[in-house]
Image (cartoon, rainbow, N blue to C red; front, side, top):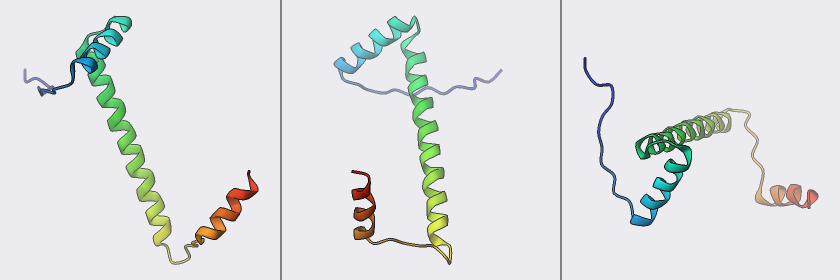
Length: 81
């Protein structure tokens, strides 16, 4: 059976490794598990951000898109202060 995982090597400072080890120990998990969780969260966030940016670009590209000047935006912000 072929493995569904790949191997990679990452270098971190000793301080970061100590912090990761402490967190892993507190969670009763391995450092590998912790790093994979962090990577999963980063990838999910990146995918979400990319999707939202593309949605906004699509809206801005529409023929009836409305744009506001920086002064308009400043005036709106001032209303909430």
